Amino acid sequence: MNTSSVAVFCGSREGDNPIYMQHSALLAQLLADAGIAIIYGGGNRGIMGAVANTALSRNGKVTGVMPMILAEREQEHTGLTRLIVTEGMHERKKTMYELCDAAIILPGGYGTLDELFEMLTWNQLSIHNKRIYVLNTNGFYNYLHEHMEHMEAEGFLYTDVENRISFFDTPEKLMEGLV
Image (cartoon, rainbow, N blue to C red; front, side, top):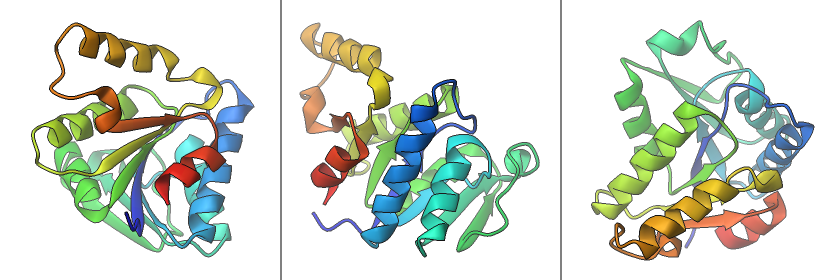
């Protein structure tokens, strides 16, 4: 697969463990250095801000997609390669999916999980066939991965978990799986 752009779904907060910010910044550096454009939520705080600012500092291309309702709340990033403002959250997610070749999930909260599960659902329904990569920093997504395997074991998934989503413990390993 030739990946030229990725949607990065992540938190607008930093989290309590500094490794989340460190891994997110390192991944953004690796993506920028590989010439892979980043499409993300458009914020300038938390992990979102670390991803955008690190990639931009490496001359990476960063497109933010932000609904009007969040522009003020999440501190819209004003130094991006491109900022797209959408009417609402659904349009934001759809735009991000359309602009990317694959998606990367970093630590985050409810919004990050919403984006992950919508992308997985659309993948299962053949609305798209884009791969989803999870950076499982410090085991952040261990329980989620276990639960997905449990859903599979209990007969609720149409294909194996690994057919749609891949989990990696470090930014370097994720990049090896991506490119």
